[in-house]
Length: 195
Ligand SMILES: Nc1nc2c(ncn2[C@@H]2O[C@H](COP(=O)(O)OP(=O)(O)OP(=O)(O)O)[C@@H](O)[C@H]2O)c(=O)[nH]1
Ligand SMILES: [Mg+2]
Image 1 (cartoon, rainbow, N blue to C red):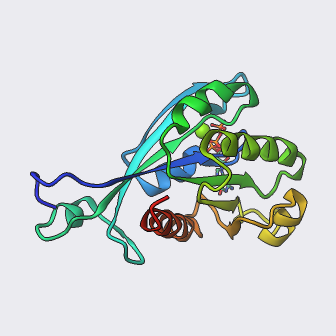
Image 2: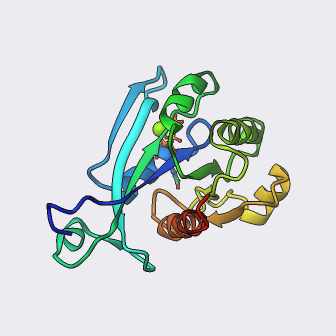
Image 3: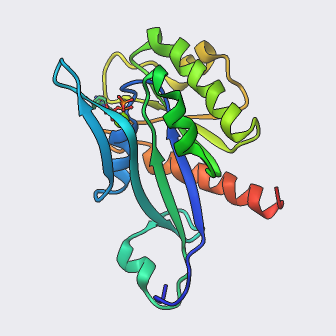
């Protein structure tokens, strides 16, 4: 893309419960991403405002590097990745950071069935912010761990039929680009229908 051309932007909101892997996923997709975090008493960190990264997409089956995106003759879409805090009381921050998003990558921890009540609450919350029909893909994350549940089991527990589930690992990258590409295609389809 030449410097004087303005890129079209898709904003993707990354949501899900506490410690599901949202920050890890944003940083896997963009190694220059930035996050506003705080350290908890147990030494782990948690997002308190947002994760912010970007990738480029030209409508094909892969993302473009920054160099490919800057090449003359291309006009890719700039995909803004806006990660959010997962703690339940951070709802006002999620509402503010979700504004204007065209799609949602929803991350759940496949090793934490006890957390699914929170996951469902945040899933419903996000739809109340962005509309019931917002394009969405759910990543059944942490598949690299031996106690992870498969996507179908997660889907049954969450009782969600309307959204595609993808097995993934934000740590190894398994399924992450596939999930984002599936979502971007849904967003593009929705845009082309003019809604
Ligand atoms: N094994 C494994 N660990 C993961 C994976 N994704 C994230 N983690 C770990 O899970 C913990 C929480 O990851 P984060 O990316 O901070 O989770 P988050 O959803 O951003 O958490 P909050 O901002 O607190 O809501 C960290 O210790 C990560 O290393 C994964 O796919 N596999
Ligand atoms: Mg985080």
